Amino acid sequence: MLVQLIASAFAALPQVLAHGGVLSISIGNTWYNGWSPYNSPTGQTTIIRPWSTYNPITDATDPTISCNDDGSSGALQLTAPVTAGEKITAYWNQIWPHPYGPMLVYMAQCPGTTCTGVNSDTLSWFKIDESGLINGTVYDGFWGDGLMIADNSSWTTTIPSTVPNGPYLIRFETIALHSLPAQFYPECAQLMVTGGGSLAPTAAELVKFPGAYSNTDPGLDVDIYSNTAQTETTYPIPGPPLYGSGGAASSPSGPSSTSITPTTTVSTTPPSSTPTGPTVPEYGQCGGTGYSGSTVCASPFKCNVVNPYYSQCY
Image (cartoon, rainbow, N blue to C red):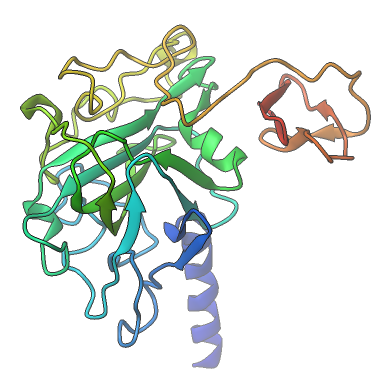
């Protein structure tokens, strides 16, 4: 029996390590620990809504796709204060293993004075941030997911300064395209926004979860290993147009039209110094302020500057 239990544990381990979700959030100097899906919910208190599993959602119409659970708040649910225009950062388990796919961030305003007790499936969501194919081809390019990995498996977005004050859910989502069907990893947190404006999202910018995506959306039903993907340089990011765009459809992302909000900066200029040292594998660090390791990327990858503190082979 003991041997069987050990074998079962090791069989399950790779699956857990291969997936995950948002484990913590920071706003300014305040850090919020996340929900622990495999622990008892008793006593857990955090701004992050309860979520059920490290495993991906693989159906765009799954009833748990709004916040990776049944949509309810926790028994000891907290709400974080945030000022419109302030940055908020979500942190995934490290190192996030899926570099091919888009990053998306949504918000939904709750009725009344709090989101506690409000089911996320009933809300209307608007997209405040997205990053799809940043450069290269669909087959082997640099994606929003890769940028999240490069930034210490985290994603920083800005609460729009124009959103009206009130209670909101924020929904961080990474979509992995390395397999079909696509893999969805959404997690939500509760916020109370102050200092905001008066720009409500338009009807064209609002969606429901489930409902925002279908399994046949071109940005989800894509085989990144196909012959077509090896030359395709644009990618249609799923979901509605970005909040504040006036309801216009988002352009496909790619080297000539990268969909990244001003809160995220990417440079693909290689470091000026002559590369030295042993080869660094794909997605390994190859430069940055204070970095003293190798700057030589394994062929055919090049060392690209993500920010002044981090350069990456891709």
